[in-house]
Image (cartoon, rainbow, N blue to C red; front, side):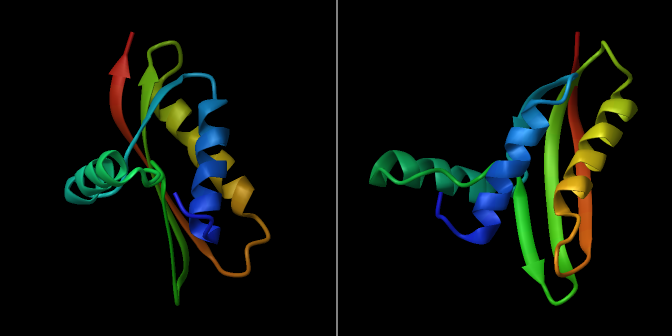
Length: 109
């Protein structure tokens, strides 16, 4: 991982997500090809892996995508909403508008 503002924000978001009750896992949100390339590169070249949470900045603002696994203790939509709200709260005061997407990939017991 680099120390770019996007990767630092991705790390911070991952930390916040891991603290939310009901989230059991955070999955890579980058396309599979990018994820595999990052894993192979990290193993072969002793470099850090790409962040699990995707943070991109363009002329429209910040875009965040997180893919989570949740458990059945709380309804999945409530856990997803809590994750979304925590990310939005973290981005308050950002110089540009934010788009936040939280995908629920797995519900386990």
